[in-house]
Length: 170
Image (cartoon, rainbow, N blue to C red; front, side):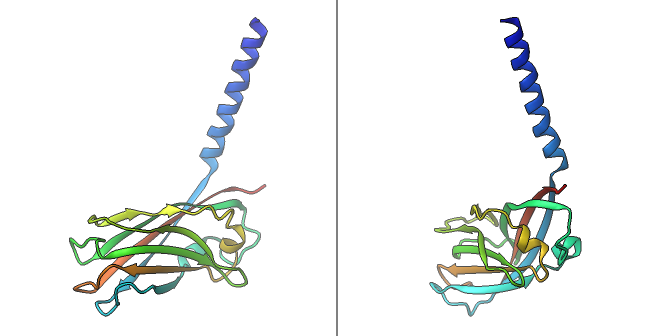
């Protein structure tokens, strides 16, 4: 009985320490871009804005030998960059896609039926599997698709912030 308890405690300690080590070596790298929502954008129509993720490419873009693996989206958020005091009440839906040269586009985050009067909103993450091929390829592109409930009374800049997470490759 004493051996079973000691074995269980030792196994628990090993499992907890492995999880701790993995969380210590896990990398997180951000990507941000701004999307201009003009006053001329009609309501109830999907609009798309595309940006090349140059800051992600600086870290390992186009380097298939980058020593990372298991890349996923760990966080996705939109917020009003301008006008000051603006809110997201005009938005109906938001979808975020990523792709790169030679890869298909993947939906990584979205939110439907937005009913927020706040200036920022966390998006729901889509389980797209690992994004290693996309992130390690050159020309990582992020496409934001949105639909408004009603037209905005002034131009808005919306900040899109994505956090990618990965672990070191052997």
